[in-house]
Length: 274
Image (cartoon, rainbow, N blue to C red; front, side, top):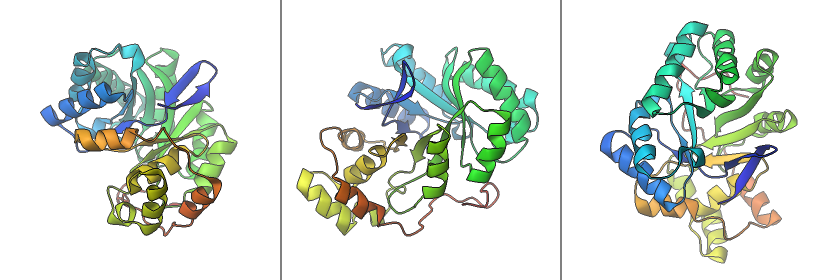
C-alpha cells in the first residue's frame, strides 16, 4: 500500500473502498474481505444507508480502529441548519460504532452549506472528526467554502481517464486540498475496461485496463482513489497496483483519453460543473 501525507505525521492510503450500493450482509462481507486483503480506508455516506453494516464489519475484522481510515458524508437532506447537520453526524458516529470519523464531507452542494460547515468545524474542534472536506464542489464553490472553513482538506469528485478535472484539481493542489476520486473506473464502463490504450499499456506490465486506470489516478500528486468492488477477485485486482509505475509518456497517453464522460450527474443535486 502507498500512502499520501495529509500533514506531518498523518497520512491516508492511496486506495480505499467505495461502498455505494453495498448493503446488508453483502456489505459486511465485502468490507471484511477488503480489510483482510489490506484495505485500510473505507468510504461511506449517510445516503448509502450502510453505516451500521460498515461499523459492524470494522468491529468484526479484528483490526484496530486506529488502523482504519473511515470517511462519511452528510446527506443533503440533513443540511437545513447547523443543528440538523451536527445531530446527523452524531447519529453516524453511533451507527459506525466509533468515537470519531477520519474524514467528514459534505456529500453534494445542496442545502445550507454555510451552517453545515459551521457544524463540521465544531465537530472537528470536539475531535469527532479529524478532517473536514467537501464532495462534488467546483472551484467557485470551493472558494466560497474556504472563506468559512479554511481547513478543508479534501474534495471528493468523480475522476477517471475519460473525465478531465484539470480546473478543480489545479485549484485544489494550489490550496493544499487532496482529491478523492470516486468512480475511478467510470462505474465499470466498457470504455475503460475495454479501452485499447489501457489494454496496450497493461500488456507491458501484465496488468488489466482497470489496474492501469487506477495506477494513473493515484500516481498523480495528492490524488486518492476509492473504487467500489464486491467480489474478492475485484477487491484484489484493485489493490494490486503498487508493484509498478507508469512512465511519463504513458501517463500523458492516458490523459489524452478525456472525452467528457460523467457517469454521476443528478439534476437535482449537481452544480454547474467547471
